[in-house]
Length: 172
Length: 172
Image (tube, rainbow over the protein chains, first blue to last red):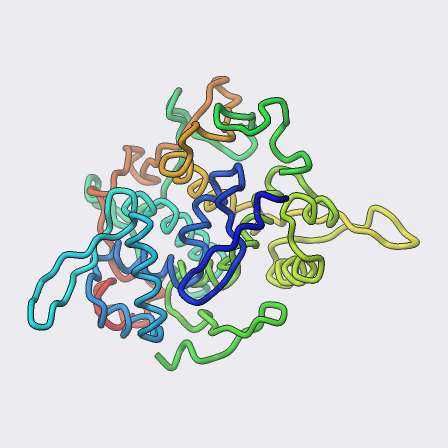
């Protein structure tokens, strides 16, 4: 548990860092595990790029928004490109690392559509290849078959701190 | 923006509620958008079920842990089943709604494996059907083809507050 005593700052918020945890879920949460941050990533994925547009869409305080964007830039999730000088103004865009968070946002959207959208999905994902609304079906990168929750188990990987310990046993 | 002024409590933490936002990502974050919560769900997915085990694995204060578990129960994500009387002790288990968060946790794990695991993945997902480590390849629920980020676009769905507004335009 000494691995989670290092404090991290997110703007002015002091919090325990997950950086020392031997877990890729925790490493993802270390960067996007703040509620506003994934809504910012959602907007960036939809093509929103300007500070004022984020502010209007999220109703977030300007200083908090500036902190979140700076943290995402520092973490390699967004890059900013000037679109105006005097005064300088920036477009914010996702890097490849940031675009790859699209899968996390999509998984959240599909969960919300299923469990918290009584009037139906607010947004549909259209698959341009076939032209139909789609939900994503996970298939195996090795055999191509559909992967269900009952068809998988977890094993320690090459980056495991303790290769002999089954994931899920105490301690982490 | 009046839709996000209703305060919500998560234990003792006052925060703005996302409940009024017309967005399934926000509805998912309304429930799991707190860093510890998704690590709790991760552990529940791995079969961890006891309060003391969560405490040992997460290094989280007992009162905070109790609040998080109560909130997950209230939100229909976990249910608790007594395994002992005098004093009564509970096993915590994911409901179907909670198990469905597995896709969110998996998407986070895969992102962390790719971008924040310099020694390789700490945990592997093994596909029992073929016996190999797997990463999940998203395919279309309609046509079965692989879905790439460049192959999709978003449209307003049946639950859209404003069916004429393209997702991503201001305001949300």
